Amino acid sequence: MYREWEAAGVPGAVLWSSVSGGSETRVLPDGCADLLWSSRNGLLVAGPDRTAHLSRSAPGDLWIGLRLPPGTGPAVFGVPAEELRDRRVPLADLWGRAAVEVAERVETTLSAPGDGAAGVLTRVAQERLRAAGGPDPLGARIAGRLSAGATVAATAAEVGLGARALHRRSRALFGYGPKTLARILRMRRALDLARTGAPLAEVAARSGYADQAHLTREVRELAGVPPSRLLTPATA
Image 1 (tube, helix red, strand yellow):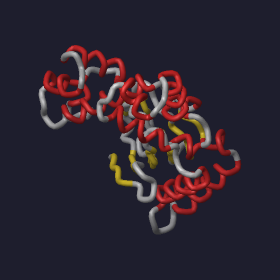
Image 2: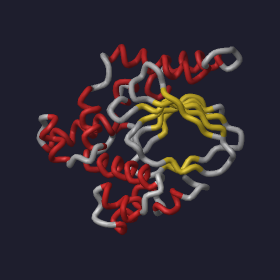
Image 3: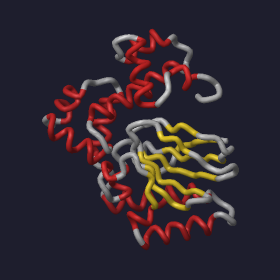
């Protein structure tokens, strides 16, 4: 059972909750970083993934997460995104005693009325963003242009950076270079279009792939399975 909703007060962020049925879940890369609370594992940080992450939980495990948009994670977690790439890290490893205090705030909400752990995660992110002066605005600009289908070269020119500087800033903001982020965002764009019922050949053309075979190869490399597996009711 999974649901998600807007995180008020954290621009672009999404709250989500899930109760595990005990089966493996394929989490596709999206350029985001998550602040997580698990009924079994406590507070964790999920860094930006380059390929699909296979999540395994025991039946009945509760997960609550705050998914931060691309480029926002470093301002909240206090480390460059590349240090968290492809990792699930206990929050205490990053924040020390401050993470213990957050855990205590979460535990207090579990038996009390109100917005519970989701509210705590949101408020913590708000506090961290205020202390950091907000996320680096360059992150939203880069991700926005790449998400819209702009080339890496055009994006670099628009934000006023050379190729090497864009690569360095992207690794710090997103965990990987702009080409990898562009591939991930294009895949997400293509899958969203495919879920509307558009044929895969049309999806490939409209999403900037050379052809349907190119789309299939890219999705398989990033998601671990072909598009058809992701678009069936059981796995979508």
